[in-house]
Structure formats: C-alpha cells, structure tokens
Image 1 (cartoon, rainbow, N blue to C red):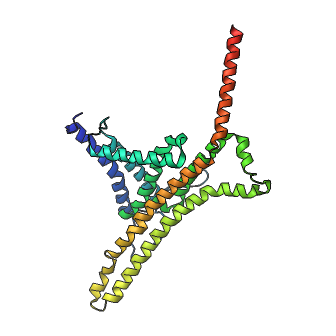
Image 2 (image 1 turned 90 degrees about the horizontal axis):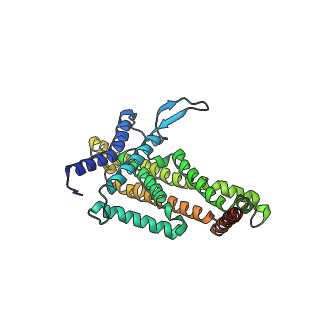
Image 3 (image 1 turned 180 degrees about the vertical axis):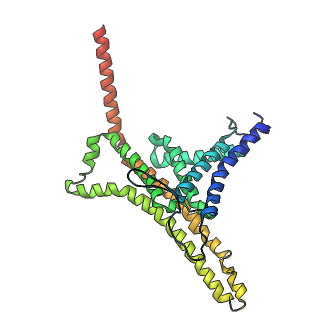
Length: 307
C-alpha cells in the first residue's frame, strides 16, 4: 500500500476531522449557550433541552453531549491509528497503536489472568473514556466525570459484568456466597454487594468534582488577591487579575491532568479486580466439564441406539 497516496491522505484527514469535530461542536455549543457571569459559578451540567417521557422528562445536558463527543473522538482516533495497518509496521502511528495494545493486554493478563484476555479492549475503552472526559475541562467544557449520572452508568455496567461472572459458577453458589463465612452476615454481605457500584461511582465522581471546585475557588481567590496586592499601584492593573495567569495553570496539572488520569486508572483497576475476583473459575470449569460429559454421554447413547 502506498501510504503517500492522495486517497490515503484524504482518508487520514477525514478521520482526524471526525475526531476533532465532535469536540469543536461541543465547545461551540457551550459558547453559544453559556450565560456570562463574573461570579463563582459552581453548578451542575447545563441543561440544553428536555424530551418529554412517560415517567419523567429526559434531560439532555452538557455532560451527555460532551460524553458523546468524547466517544466519537475516541472512535475516529482509533480508526486513524489503525488506518493502513500492516503485518510489518510501516508508520509511527502503528507502532504507537501496537504499544498501547501491548500495554493493555499485559495489564489485563497481570490483573485478571489468561481467561479474561478478551477484556483488554473494554478496559482500554474505559480508561480512554474516563481520562479524556476528565481532560475535557481543559477546553472549558463540563467534564462528564463530574456528573454522577455518567459515572454511575459506568459503575452499573461494571456491576452487571461482576454479577454475570459470579453467576457462571451457578446460581446456588452465588446465593450461598451471601451467607459466608457465617449465615448471620447475610445482611452485611448484601449491603456490601450493593455498595460496589455506589463506591466506584462516588469515588470517581467525588475526586473529579472536588478538583473542579478547588480549581474554580483558587481562580477566584487569585483574582481577589490580584486586586488586593496590585490595585494600590493602579486600579487598571488590579483589574487585569494578573495572578490568575500561570499559577492556576500549574495547579491544573494536578487537579485536571494527573488526578483525571489517576482516577481513570483506578476505575479500570477496580473493574479488573472485581470482575476477576468474583469469578469462581474452579467451579465454572467443573460445571463445564460436567456439561460436556453429559453431552458426550447423550451422543454415545444415541450412537449405541442407532447401532
């Protein structure tokens, strides 16, 4: 394949545009609908419009729009990274893509074992979605990870996977686990099971939201401090709020970048631990061997009857 062909470059440009346009669209929508304010504004996601529904109205908020934009950006970015992929790497992007895949596969294999090797794309997707959603705040957007509804949806999805793999050992084994190690711990075990998605969602949501609030408060504090310290020189210089330049950006390295990436890694790690830790592999293998033995016995009985 000629990677320098016009058609190849045109597809590259379209894929990059597909990754950028959703984010730019979310920014444009934010700018066009935002209400100007000179005060500290710490609120939830902006509501764009409401869809009437039978039980309750469906609110389409900035968190949902930005989340959809991030998902589309990740999709087109993955398509761009794998465009023109070959058996022998012939581009830097393929080397980067292979490095990401290798790291995700190793992480899943280390934390979950060989049986869950197919989980690598899911874990990579969770990490990318969480990290980029948090980093969207650097573009002035409302980070979806600051909305409990978004993060709780991820946690419920993970909880469904946890329950699914726990049930692979059998319904009775799963039900019996609530009465272990002693029966009177049944209520505590039920509460602990239900607390899994709650703790996952609130841990992620709380850390990202607190970082956003602290960043907003510090920016407002530096504005006031600038007026206080520099206003005596000239009211004009004080109103420039010079102390808001640079210092909040340095603090953002932790609150927006480091914390966002760390919470994405923690959420993915908890997902791997809960899913693999709740999977009764020995019981599952025993049930599988028993089903195969029964199936083989039925086939042999049919062959014997036919003979």
